[in-house]
Image (cartoon, rainbow, N blue to C red; front, side, top):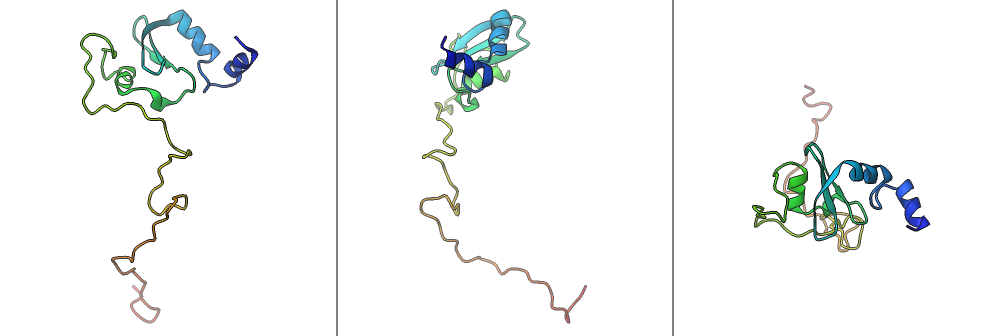
Length: 136
């Protein structure tokens, strides 16, 4: 293990497994499976806790739908085991585009490449009564 890897494990939690999680996983973890991105899923022997050790950068959206359901106890059958069937609406993982070149900006956003000009309002704004009119 390089010095850079050791320092990253000591001082950051988002670049892979931390020392505490690695120790807990080694002492109490039972490997359940691995997804197509290399993330490894564990549980305790009594199945009281479930967790994932990310392969690289820790980003919650990298957990596929089937494994997400298993982690959150929506099912006890992990993906890849007999009896598991994915739903037809499940889609493959797409990285989170926030802040990147593929970020999605809503209409009217100042960051949108081609800003949309607002249309004329379909209503008339409310204005309070004049001082000499009805004063409530």
